[in-house]
Length: 94
Image (tube, rainbow, N blue to C red; front, side):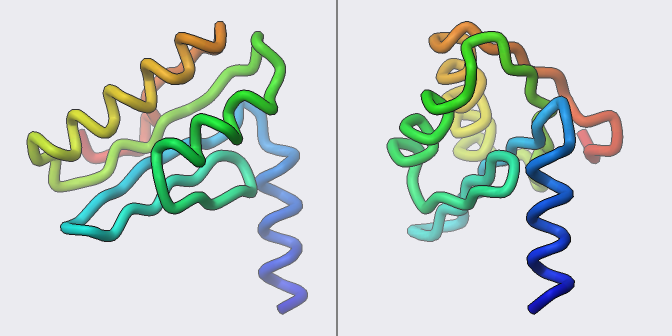
């Protein structure tokens, strides 16, 4: 438990913030910094809590199916709507 809390604290301090979205069938998992959400709507509400100049690094999920690409694009659009910037994680497999 202590290790998990330390990992969450590290993620909260890491800038630019990490962000990712993953969906398989009915299951969706979206993460931003130390927060985890279960829908794009909840992710959008969490993104709105960050300052409008926040920077994010997006981890691209694999495989890059058409549904996954659409979800990634929706996340990028949410960030853009809030005046935030995103870049692709250089360690992603895409």
